[in-house]
Amino acid sequence: MAVLISCTGKRQPVQQGDGTAIPFRYARLIHAEQHDGYKLVTVDNPWKPGTPLHRYILVSDGQTPPSTSEATIIRTPLRRSVIFTSVHAALVGELQAQQSVAGVADLKYMKVPYVRQGVASGRMADCGDGLSPLVEKIIDVQADAILLSPFENSGGYGRLEDIDIPIVECAEYMEQSPLARAEWMRFYGMLYGREALADSLFSVVEQHYSALQHLADSAAGHPTVVCDKMAGTVWYVPGGRSTIGQMLADAGADYPWAADAHSGSLQLPFETVLERAGHCQLWLLRYDSQQPLTLEALLAERDGYRMMKAVDAGQVYGCNVTTSMFYEETPFRPDLLLQDFIKILHPDIPNLPPLRYYHKIQHSTKVSQLSTQNYQSSIINNQFGRPHRSALCPQPLRRQHRHSGSRCA
Image 1: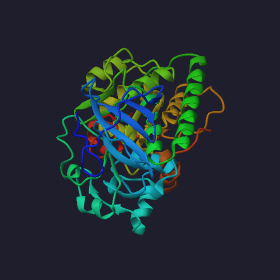
Image 2: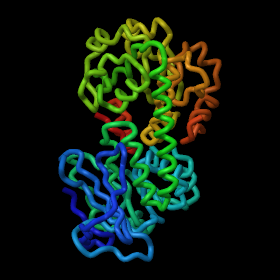
Image 3: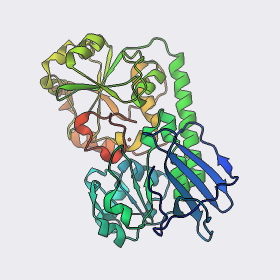
Image 4: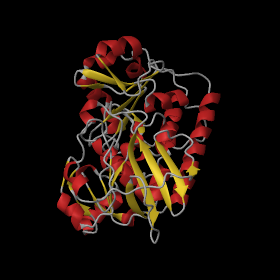
């Protein structure tokens, strides 16, 4: 169980009497109750079932916090928060609370426009590396909360635990379904005084996701799909119960590992994937590059890729996680990723918007006809939108995308 302290550094009790439950329909790791003058929020420990990771008392300005039991006191709405993860920075922007961000960590991985502009103008502080933040800068900006992602056996948060600033442990990436993870936006709405907006946005996500699922259910056929590609000597394949695995099922895919019980990824040799999934009609992969991937470049990585049926059929789709907002958007907007999957799997379904994250991998002669600058700007400018990053990430991308809070198993 985490050490629970108040924003004054002292243990604060919380009334354990009757409160009105604030229901979460999908999320299983977070629970909230409305009490007289405050909210009690409990985050379960995903690595030790049955025990809390952290408890918070959210107290509005002008209200007096309770005086029994232990929890971390957070004054809401937050006005001077420091955010360690780009996915949460993107969400805060969508909740129209970007003025409440006073600093960020891991700036070099932050692609969120208001963050880049805020640091450049001096309005936001660059608080250094997320693994060894500049604690003095966090103190200097008079932060009222620090948002970061917890990890199993992390050894705690070092000096951050000693500076009397509440730590918000953003554990939604450990939820077991796309909508469960997305529903945590309601908690962040409570923190930033945007509760009604967050509830409304989640309703949009939920309804859009459900409508897309029904579209996929009505489609003819279940195309076979293989995901991602080799990372070093290992191919990281999404498990059947992973976020990607579940979304492929919701999109109507025939996924070779659909019956697998892992919620993370499987580490497999190339030969195993080729034997089990080489026949797949579609290949959806993620890659990390400043330039669009070409078929020639893909085949140069490993000649054995030529044996994949999808390569021969020209049905390889790539998501460039560097030039897209994949990791920033999809954790809280799984409907937009599901939309891409359905458009690729079922091209006969009419009236779906253009692909947002994935694009067909072309021969270099075709790619050279495109303006790389236009390609990148069109993706980056396609911001966290309404419908018209858990993402699993390959091993070499783990450090680069630790800011996303993605489940990188």
